[in-house]
Image (cartoon, rainbow, N blue to C red; front, side):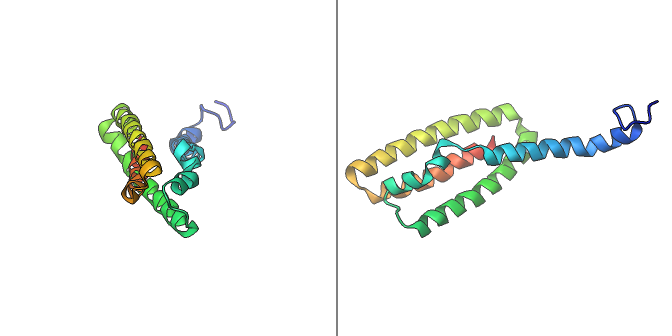
Length: 136
């Protein structure tokens, strides 16, 4: 038996039960925070294109999205144990695709006809899009 704190020692085995999972979780959270979807990157121009030009309104929507993301990411993490990762990923990918198509159609409707309800619906579907993004 070696005196080093390597994989063969009892202290390493006890230590690794706690450190390796927490390190994995920390790295996963870091990757999720750094990951930018195309909608998050272009959120301000999207909001401008649907008639939301006030910086206070944009900041409020962004804050609401961040709180929404945190809540749904928590529930998505809990759901992974119950439903499995593959069904959640399939639900997430298909939901994001449908939401993105609806966002695009509503943005085009607002751009052509200046219907305020279409602009408001874009904001609602942004929340839906990020809800599907967060559960995977």
